[in-house]
Length: 301
Length: 257
Image (cartoon, rainbow over all chains, first blue to last red; front, side, top):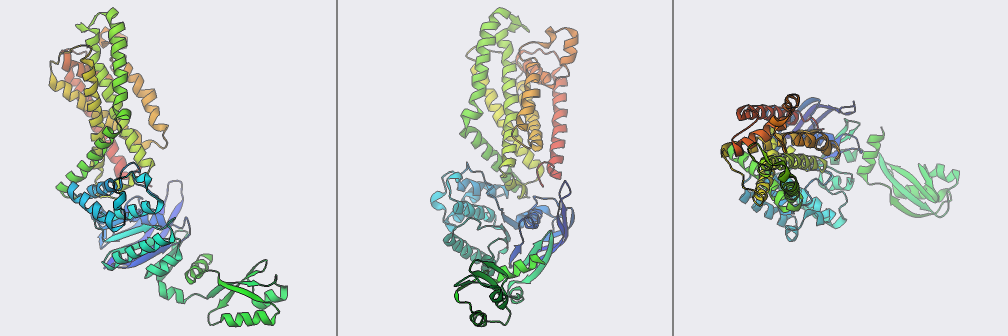
């Protein structure tokens, strides 16, 4: 069954800004799915239409087979959302923030607070459960938003840049938690600017640009399509024109030269060419990871 | 949502708002008590001694219903407009909008918050008045009816203001330039029947007159306008405001997008 099915989704805001120009998107139940795109591409608008914060202009949206227009309440019950910005009441305690959200989903006070305690423990926030939320660190606030989104046990969890501003250690911890959640059956839709996160977590992805889907498919399949790998070579001296030509330099910054090794090519061959042209390679480093290559080449088209 | 789930959602909203009102009582409850105490002292005590009787009772007693009503109006309105606009501004209104709470329940939750604060401050001001005078309560049903209708009407008005407000200045404009003048000109400190005929006619266009007058009827058993007419006018305005607010919530105007 499809967890999300979006057909021909369009959104034009008051003032004429066309944020979505006909998005088609399918996310299978149980998937860990990435929605990628530059700032302003339409990711957050798509999410906001899904969760009912933005009214669509055209198109059809269904969640677990339920049409959003015909069954708005059932669709909302199926979704938990972690927005990009902190939007809880900072004067309330984390326990109250979570329990209040549970109440909005129809939970009794007892059940809501019991669930809040359970989620606070699962996300490592138990010792902060009674302090005003404004006193939490950035990473704790992110975890609080995840806990709040999970209070009613949604089948679909939507995360809009959940690890923005979170340190590496905490991010890895959140990845483990999300992986476990997904393994337990929760479908996850993720937007992020950390492409490493997509490679680590997601099975399928789409790239949105200017309100349209420009690339879609399994992450592994799409990665296999990348034309090559980009490297930054540090030379002993700034390259001459002949050396630039020999290396196929795309960009030069002092002694740093950016080059792309095409699919099938080797780093060894590149270094050999540099040596033949009289250049000495001191260091070589990946300029981007493979998904970044794919992403950048897609949005550049 | 099932009936029990709707009840849980409603009481969650009311509990949250009531906790907030009592947690920050120096901001929500105390100011009206202090202001109205000064009115009792200055207008009721110092000025009232020279005015003598009005409407068949001492001036101090006469102004009690008006001052209680003034507190109810200001607090029910301010509570809803500030809470709703803050929730919109801080984006925690999204917590409600992404949940399956229906629009009528969202409106009910916010308005109940306004009713609670209006009723509590009204009760406190009434309590303060007992230090100055002992007003009779001839028709308790009318006291209760007009208190509830007034608090509801201004809660609904505050909600509408909150929907349209785009910045914090917008939530003060209506209260400053419309609500306060209408309240002072609504017969809080005087009986409309003591005005010249022309001004009586003009005063009857002021909706606050009906609230103060009906409320005063509950205490003294006399009114310038029939209490039934007043109750009808207030009920019609409440229904109209509720309908407009629900439409705003359903279409998302000023809230979504």
